[in-house]
Length: 178
Image (tube, rainbow, N blue to C red; front, top):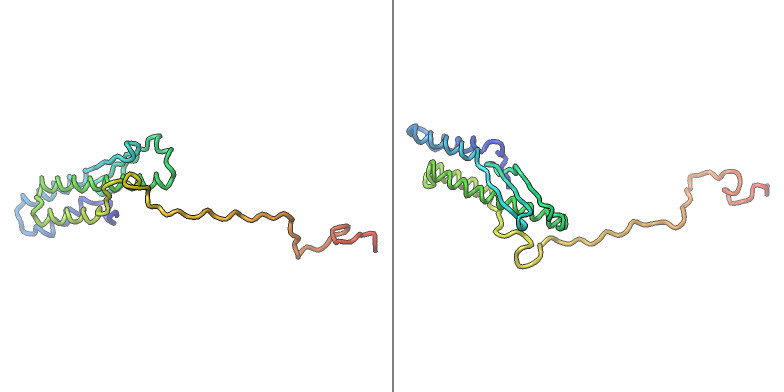
């Protein structure tokens, strides 16, 4: 879901501009630089579970803020994790929209650089769900595992075969019977 180039989305945009704009006027290079600067400063947020979860992602798609309301304590752990992940994916989908706006304002969506940037972000964050799990037509699709068997308990303390019988009743006979 996340790109291996998370630290430098602006460098990625600049490299796309350099590969597609060799020998072009300075104005195009300036627009590519402006796009790279905008992408580097972009953030997007999404809210989940009726406002109880809020996620903010940076221009790279990495989570920069996660806010949880006290209402999330009512959710089971698996449902909470699914809600958080779905909210992260919605924030990343909003980021793709913000990048599309930045591309349209700077280099244009119909240019080679614009198409490359949009394709990269769309591919990187393609798995964004429309509705969060558990809020659609049924419960979440998390498989239920059977409960583990209880740990065995022993009623009698087993004797250890490597112990040497001591003096007295431990040997199983009366020590006075010798």
